Length: 108
Image 1 (cartoon, rainbow, N blue to C red):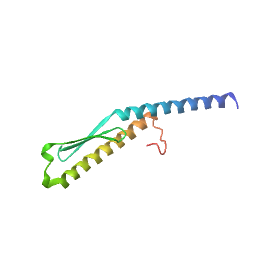
Image 2 (cartoon, helix red, strand yellow):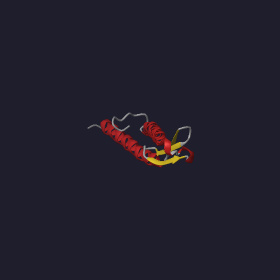
Image 3 (cartoon, rainbow, N blue to C red):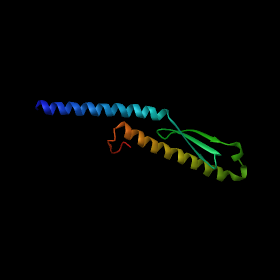
Image 4 (cartoon, helix red, strand yellow):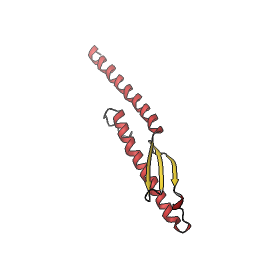
């Protein structure tokens, strides 16, 4: 192995290590971020972290009607789905930034 090839391998290894460090840091940051989605005109709010875990569900008291339980369930489901979708989109953008635009199959 010549000095040029060894130098390129060292540079590549350093770049890979930097990307790995960025990914770990970004994952930690994402876990602490909060993304909020609402449904039913703000009657239901779902809060997710940046990795798509639902952290909180808020339901306005006026949304609770014993005769409209199915509507409330659908509204909660819509808010949760929107929060997860926001988290996935946000995570994809952040991970793309962390890798410097390098697409890593299966990662995001």
